[in-house]
Figure 1 (cartoon, rainbow over the protein chains, first blue to last red):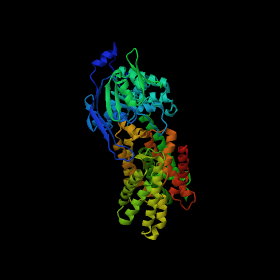
Figure 2 (figure 1 turned 135 degrees about the horizontal axis):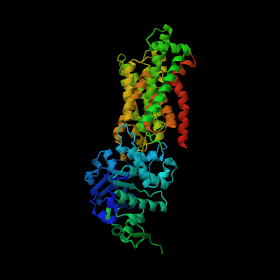
Figure 3 (figure 1 turned 180 degrees about the horizontal axis):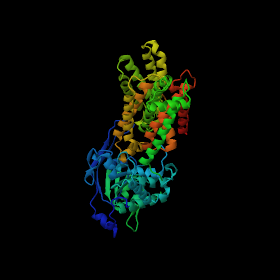
Figure 4 (figure 1 turned 90 degrees about the vertical axis):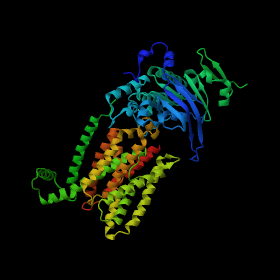
Length: 287
Length: 336
């Protein structure tokens, strides 16, 4: 059983051609947001209007320094924040207006931290991803189990099935959390700093996996990340934010300009272009 | 890998109902006047077929012990389900109607109705429900720190609220005739010896409605335990679920307190033990907590009736003797 609505017959040949042929799935049109200065401890924050589009099979990275509005933008995409102006539409539907259950069938979000109050087995955790499809009283069907098992297989974590969530390493846990999102069979997959607690090898394999999943399952994938080089190496598009403003949207090569990144991150940088045409950012050695 | 199925829930609940039946038989047998097992069996069998039974057995078994056992079932089931509900609502495994001060709120409501409307029977459960709702709201807002529910602040807020409400209750009790005082003192501790002013069947219907309402949210509560935002992302209508559980758990607490006073810790001990045995899934926890709470209170009350017979202890003393040390143990274990 394939995870989402895959039409694997289309998968032959260059995926790039098909990606270009796909209609855009996620439309962000001049979406903005502002937090009120209601609570003393939070400074008021505003996200200026942002626009971009993501097609199925595409991976878009949102990059920027701390407090640039990355997580706010992600929550707008997830539909849990309502934009102050503009619209966020997924296949024509405004995401913040969808009922929670329908939204969870179309959008899966991998959050930074997931605190468990009680210990849970890996398979129980992944089955939670089937909840948006459940009917009262919410017992999972054999189909749900098969989909959860398939999701675990897609992240190469079948062997973890009976382990406790609390026993997993950072990389294993991240894969299982991803598997729960896959079990939701979403159209749009959102990840908030998924590489935060991972070592370099795990970071690269996660991004590879995301790109492969985007291609095979026809997801539109949006990743918030601090890792410029991961974004440069794996993203089809990059959105660069600074202090709540979108400075540029484009391919990594278009966005990763030395002057621009040096100004945004306040560090001396060098940018090298790999033979594959991917930009790579280095910290310029101090003299 | 053993996913939960409806069949498994039915099987486990069936087994637990059998255990409840056994504990009811034990509770019928025990008491100030012990009844030999064979005599009990004979009288029950005769009653089942509608035959004549000895007058003393009629009095002790069917007029004294059985109504009290039914009351214990009602109160135990209510408190255990309410406790499990509050634990998910507040994301705190130590939540319990008594510890949170919700029982005290309900008790205050019941006393106020006794002072203002002494002749309206249904006033006391309704007022107890309103008191429970108010206490839950108060504790919920006192237990927040920086916009977040803080586990220890919440427990502290509950305990302080309970102590404050008890003071108000004491104050109101001085306005009642002094002949009521001993009964009131027992009632405050949690006591099943007074027949409820409302018919048991009405109370059972209220409890069934409250427990059923919580059960409709069981699958969502599993997700709510991981946090509200995460539950929202998994399609849970968080605000609706919270409102249902909040009202239903308050109703259950209100009904229980209006008939038995503030019996403590049932909502803490019973769900905790069941989690150890059956895991954390609310689709199994809610029904087993209802039956398990009933078993626990039937047995606790049987002990309370016999331990210093012919004098009777309030059942709340029994549950507190077992529950308070367990609360401290769980609290300390969580702190490490």
